[in-house]
Length: 269
Image (cartoon, rainbow, N blue to C red; front, top):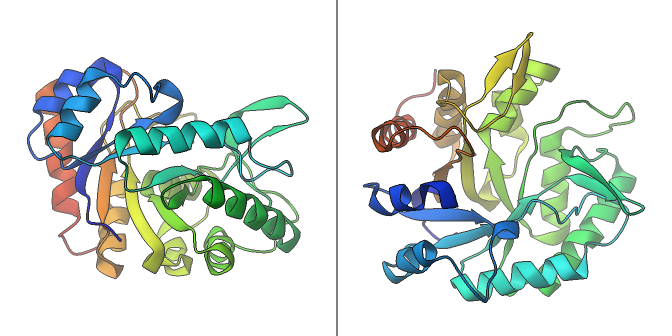
């Protein structure tokens, strides 16, 4: 896998901050928020500096029964080409059916029948993209009663069938542990980490005993503990901080990046 280093999610609201943050080695941009024929100046600046820029999709929906949208795939492909991206990432999620949008990245039923459908959708996406595809595990708000496999087992079999790469979100693993009782570190042992493309890290908030993966707060220590446990198992090609709203100061973001970098080299708890 290509070495990416330490990264941050590029957002137009913090474009200048991202440009001047020390130690940033790659960025990720929400593909739906850019036009490949008219890239934001800040992204062009970062590319000219040699930083990899990864388009990250949020609406492809490879987890549904319907084939992935040809228009969405064409957009992702155009973004990858415009950014000279090393890969494209998306979510292993269900987002629509019958033309109705779910409005959320919903978990895929972890059954072998669903696996066959997802594998076909992933192959179609891979064929349409000029670069490798990495799929992200999602934060589930519920589990399907007919689930036959764990997330890690489902992803492992999907990797065997398609060769797809993985984007592991350790904050989503933490969310699933708090809300659904699914042990995060145990999930790491099920995942095919040899296919790891990079890692997401983010903060969130607790309300009424439920953890919300908001990407609007400092990364909690338990999420960094999961990151440390992952790094004890493998050397991730890249680790990226997501922050989507209520943006803090430049110094605060720099401090978050320092905490993440430190967690990648510390012994797991």
